[in-house]
Length: 337
Image (cartoon, rainbow, N blue to C red; front, side, top):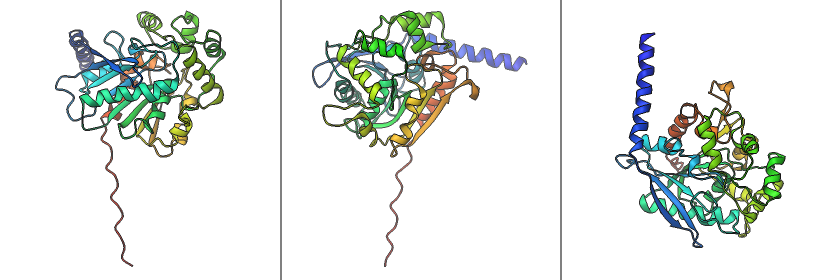
């Protein structure tokens, strides 16, 4: 019994020490210009020693959300990956956080113009190899669609939180928010924010307040219309003649999909079809539920900040990102006639 107590004290001390060390850590922020001149925000979490041989990791928040999805004043997946030796970046694309939010912009520009600019910026700092992507929600589905086209050859593997590759309108609250004002903004009423993004998640009052204060940002009427049209039809056409589903059919990256059971914004059933829609990709599904002895069933935001997220979500995510890709199979020997 005493040994167990000592182990718990040691674990608490290690956690406190890690957080104390992060208090002196400064996140480096820089501007990145997209192909059409929009200003994006890129944040770097550089580990001691520079990250070694492993690829850089680029974290992409969901549409309308910002860096706080992955870093809430030193807590979250971005600081966690940095502490575990991964050179980590978080990007805010147009309509997110400190990035530009033009009066009219489309989901196509977000995926096909902004995201490639962010990946290129990371690769310039880490020449010689692809990056690992961490993506979330509807923005995650768009990133997966870009990975088979604009990002082809630039992505090694993808960790995807609730990537809504086969979306529907999740509920009438979302339809009203996107259709009536034509936006999805941080002015979402508290009761609706709770319903959509945090629900019964195991979050502190401070975390709930910070998350509500910092998101979601205003999408603007054009992007909001795109998102609602995508939800209503299950697919979205791009100006280059492609569709989201058509692009995903060519997607081939190793992917771990995290499925929180209480996500009331990007339902688990919107993400599960990735395995069927992307037959070339090795897709692993990981459901988060008390049925599997996890701390909670998790929601759209508690899977990123819940009290049990480090154990239930971050550690398996780190193991997936740290895994080496299997070598390509050797060609079959030629058989003489």
